[in-house]
Amino acid sequence: MARRCPFTTTTASYLLGILTPQEHAEFDRHVRMCSACRREIEELTPVVRLLTAIKADHASANGQPG
Image (cartoon, rainbow, N blue to C red):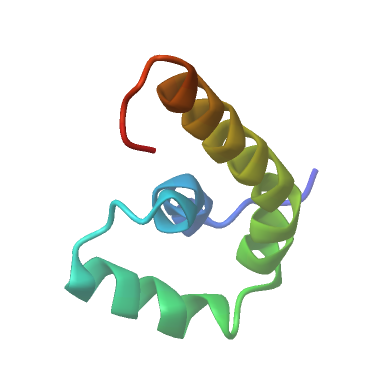
């Protein structure tokens, strides 16, 4: 069984834009050298896009800013 990178738990937060600027920069540097984290980004990106679209649609339907 392949060992996963402990930073992969940060990937969703990175994609959602909820990391601090320092955490974001640190993860940016890390992901350049980590294939596991790059793979995690590739796998989670469609999910994050879908959830963002659903959130915007829901907000629009309820008269809220997206």
